[in-house]
Length: 118
Image (tube, rainbow, N blue to C red; front, side):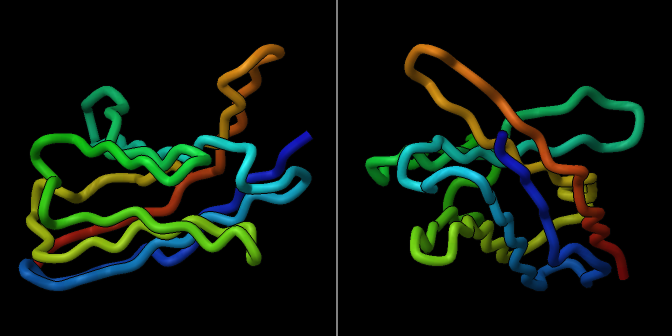
């Protein structure tokens, strides 16, 4: 069983930066694919980016160049560095841990609110 806990959300002005953290406990981080999703009010949850165990990253087109995912395997922590934030980035951000090989499994965190507003 893996527990996933996000932190670091808050209120930030447009153009500002925020770093979210996601701690995944119960399994070695390098064996997990870690992804970030977000859900804005009235919208479906959408993929933001992911970091695979080998280090490869992928991002939603609209956040490329602004958001960066990194991981610290020693701390079992994944980070989402968000720069040049826009009001449309306002959402609840969720962290997902998954095992992509058999037997597959997925664990979600509870989410952390990010609000971009002046």
